[in-house]
Length: 168
Image 1: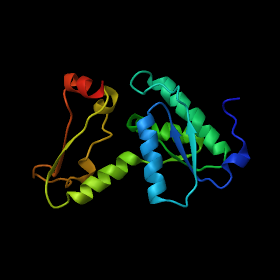
Image 2 (image 1 turned 45 degrees about the vertical axis):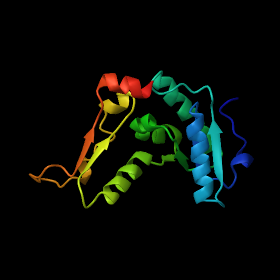
Image 3 (image 1 turned 180 degrees about the horizontal axis):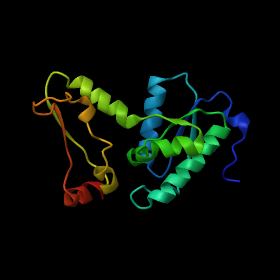
């Protein structure tokens, strides 16, 4: 049963790292986690057959939901998913799995806003067309509300042709 995780395996884990076929990201996430939290326990659930979000968003999310339910069954309460596009479905993931999802996008936006508080910033974003069409990377919340000034943070999205070059 691919959905079964022995509860004894997950004993003592609170955070699950859920991943798919993005191996370089998996290795980097684990390296960063161990460097920053050397005594913390991390349950890693990996499905190398997971399709990329851009190739099949529905199948990708169904696989992430399945892995998330397995993490919950193993005793985890929080999931880290190093996939930008999965953050478009945070609420659905949390509802389907019962886990909280770490929001890496919001964390990055807060870090950028903090580091560039004193001077305007132009932020370039590269990603798949679904991601670029969303407001996931909007920095509007960090601009002065009701101000007539030029926005402090401006996000520039490459053209669809440029995105194809970057993503593929």
